[in-house]
Length: 216
Image (cartoon, rainbow, N blue to C red; front, side, top):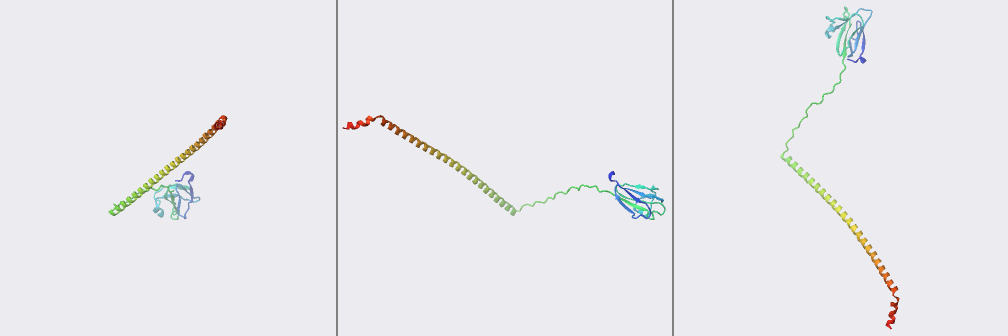
């Protein structure tokens, strides 16, 4: 049924020779029969067969004077007609269908069980091939491991060579410094010897001049 804000009311001009004699409305709609100046009534019939035959049975009237309202309904079809003599046979009847609004539903989840495929046992040939493949893979893994070890060894050798080169440079620098220091020290000692020699020669002039007289 429609909520109050969306509820609708439809008016039908109730008369003989109704055309069309079927009406479809949304669920929750109220249908109102209106007439004036003539004598009519509104009765409900039980089903489609009674509707076709204008068979009102013992249904009580819904009203003798307009307007007369029917519904609202949540869904389904109901049949109405005028019971005045000859009116229904003259076409004063109508079948009203209230169409229910479909309610959205979630699709059910997939409950199918997964299919398990049987696993075939390997034959002797395929087993041999798998073993060969495994040995080849193992050989490749070992080769890669050895290559990695060789690379690590070469890396260590390079590092050791680099360290030895640095040590050699340091030793060469130290030797050079020692040589320079020794040369400087030798120059200092040589200069001191020259200075002391000149001082001795300058302090004993008589000794230098006496040597010729003694020789005469």
